[in-house]
Image (cartoon, rainbow, N blue to C red):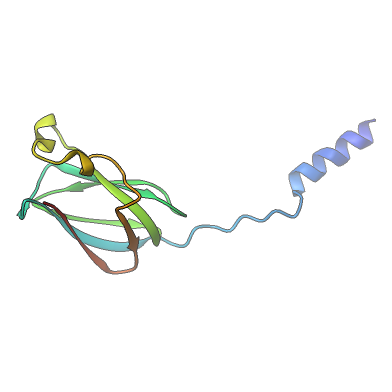
Length: 116
């Protein structure tokens, strides 16, 4: 009985042939965010992966942001900065993630988001 338990524990530790592939290394990217054609500040742009990668919440200041993310596809949306007033005037469609708004993050990419 003990031998069978040890064999089962060993099998669980070793695994059943399942391998885990790590995510690719994060890459630098930067971008701009405008509201009605003007740079926006004191908001956060949220990147939610649709495939691989980890979510990120990136501060936006004077319409500019930069960060590192795992290359791949993401949806994005905006959340408030230091006060609720920072999201006033932003359409509800940009305050929630949407599969209709997917971007592909690649190394050295410049992203330009317009909330008009």
